[in-house]
Image 1 (cartoon, rainbow, N blue to C red):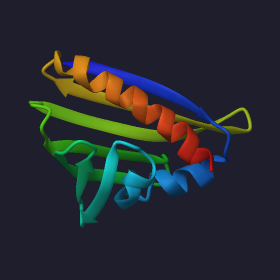
Image 2: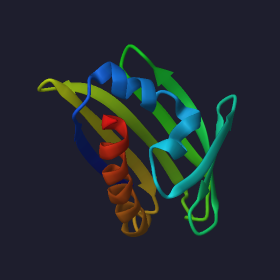
Image 3: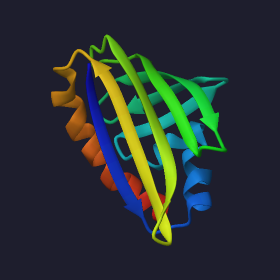
Image 4: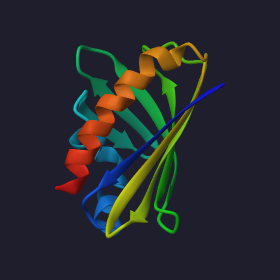
Length: 129
């Protein structure tokens, strides 16, 4: 298994960042390559720029930890396993988003890591606003 771990410092209060991160149906407002998203119960569909759809299960939204845990259950990425969390922490008057992704096969990280890096740039901007 491979782990991709990213941290993003955000110039906004933790509660404001959490309000956006915990609104799991609206992930397309936060990440540019997700052109649209919709959610029914714990299933989220994310349409991707250039085609393709991710089907995700929202495993938990934990306000006391300010953490969302989710897994990709179907995608064009040929993943055998995927689970990720986004957690909001206080950081020097602002916030820090900690995004941890575990996946198989390990080679999938070569494709997924650049996407996560692009998403981090979007998140830094869209969570501060």
